[in-house]
Amino acid sequence: MKKITILLIVVLFVCFNFVYAAAEKTKKSGSEVLKELVEKEFAKLEETGQENNVFNIEYLKSFYWSLQSNVYVNVAFKADLEQDVKRIKTEIESRYNKAVAKKKEIIAKQNKKIKKEENKIKWEPPKLEEIMPKTYHAFFLRIYKKGKMIQNYKAPIPYDNKPLEFYSFGVILDPGEYELHIVIADAVYKQIAGSKIIKINVPDITVKALMKKRSKLTTTEPVFYKAVKQLMQENKLFTIDKNSYEIGPMKLIFYPYIGTPAFKGTDKPVLTFYVFGTTPALIRGSNQPQWDVEAKLEVLKNGKAVLKFKPIKMKNPYFYQTLQFLKKDKKPLEPGDYTLKIKLLDKNNRKKGEIKIDFKIVS
Image (cartoon, rainbow, N blue to C red):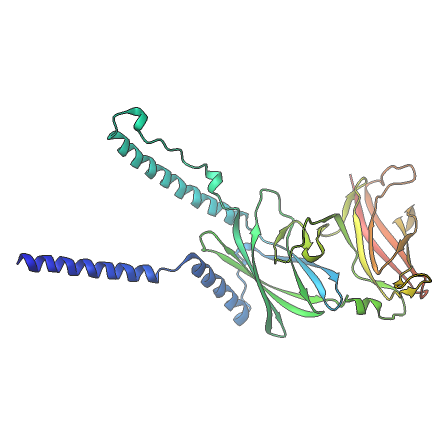
C-alpha cells in the first residue's frame, strides 16, 4: 500500500510538472502580445477603415524636401498620449510599492534571526524615477499606394515633460497619392492602441520637375522655421521626433511654425520654399551651370509697404533665408497682421513670379 501511495505521488508530481511546463510554453511573450494588439488595429483599418480614436491622432501637415528622383516627406501629427502615460506610471508605481513592501517584509523576517546588528541585511530600494521607462508608446506605420502596402516601419515615441506641439516622421516617396495607416500602442503593458488613416498627395518637387520650363516662376508652399540645426551625425533610422522634424541623411533638423506664423518683432525666423521654372546657365570660367535668381522682399501693412529688404541672390532653386522684421530705426514692427510680398526674377531666362505670405507680429 505504501509503494502504491508513493507511486501515485510521483505520477501526480510528473503530471503537475508536465501541465505547468505546457502552460509556460503557451504563455505569450510581451512582444507577441504587442504584435497581436497592433495587428488587430491594422486589420480594422485595412478591412473596414475603422479608426480607434483612443489617442485622438490628428494629421497636421506634411513638409517636402526635393531629391533627385523622389521626395523626402515629413509628416507632422498630434496624439493625446499624456493620460495614458499617467495610467502606465500609476501602474508602475503600484507594482513598485508592492514589490518594495514585500522585499522589506522578507528582509525583516530574516533579520529577526540575526542577533548581531552589523550582520543584519541592509537594503535600499531603487528610486522610482530610475525604473520608469524612457518611452511609453510605440509607433507603427504602413504605407499604401493604390491599395498595395509598399513600406512599413516602427519606432518608439519619445517622451519628456515638455509641452507637445506635434510629432513627426520622415519617409522617401515618389510623387503621388498615398494612404498612411498608423497605429500607436502602449509599449509597456501592451493594453491599449489607437489608429488613424492619413491620406497625402506628395507633390512632384524632384529636380527634374523643378527645372521643367514654365511660363512663369511658381513656388511650393512657403514655410517658416523657428530654427534649422545641423545634426551631429547622419541618421538613417526611421525615427519619431517631438516638436521638430529631421532629414536624417542630410543631417538637418527643422523646427517649423505650425499654423499661421506669429513672430515677436525680435525673432529671426527662417523662410524656405522651392521655385519652379528656373534655368541654370553655363557661366564663363565654370564647369557647372549656375543659377541666378533674384528675390525682392517687402512687408505690407494694409497694402502699403512698411519694410523692404535688400535683394537676395539665389544660387539654386531653393529659397532659404533668415529674416528679421526690423524697421530702419532698428525697432521691431508693431504687433498686428502683415503680408510678406516676394518678387522673383530668373536673370537667366527672364521669367518672373510673385508670392504673398500672411503673418502676424505679436508682443
